[in-house]
Amino acid sequence: MERVFRHFQEDLDTLKARLLAMGGLAEERVRESVRALTDRDQSALDGVLGGDEPINDLHIEIDDRCFKLLALHQPMAADLRVIVAAVKINTDLERVGDLAVNIAEAGKRYLQHPPVKPLIDIPRMGEIAQAMLRDSLDAFVRRDIALAEAVLAQDDLVDALKTQIFRELLTYMLQDPATVEPSLDLILISRHLERIGDHATNVAEDVIFILSARDVRHQGVEPAPE
Image 1 (tube, rainbow, N blue to C red):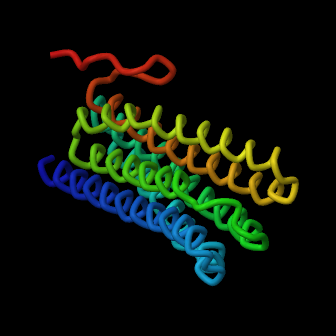
Image 2: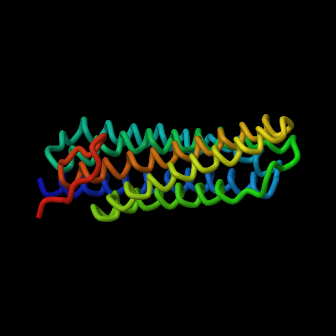
Image 3: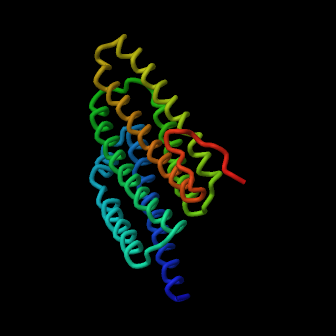
């Protein structure tokens, strides 16, 4: 019995490590897509567009690991919550990879035009979204509910920056019709970054559910019971 339990824990640790690896890949792709946009680096954007396969491969592998753990060990209570959450986190990370591709696609269109303005808020959004993603996965691995709740608190900042970007670009579009098309691409990129923040928030909510069995979706965060 002890051997079976040890084998289960080893498999669970491997699953967490693979999720961390996938999160690192997703975060790097977001970072590279935003950097390439800011630096007007066409070749780097092409690299993001053509580099989706490692994340897709990990997505399939992690799902397979989760389903095998469920089938072979039939875990209960806390362990079951971890594996179910891992399935959901895996999907969130795959979507982050897709959103990085979307940013790169919009970035390539944007680079066909003269710059509308210096890019300040979009790189800031990218940094916050990446940090949220990194912290939410760290919270998952370290079982850190306070860190997960801190991620949720960052979501409002990302939303505020998206609104600020929209308002500023709307002013440019009203003043100069030539800026409409590239400005719309920047607005679209800000929405993709907001969605990345949303996926990081999903991961943090799953961590809170794993550790406290509280479902905080749609209702904000309440203090954890002592």
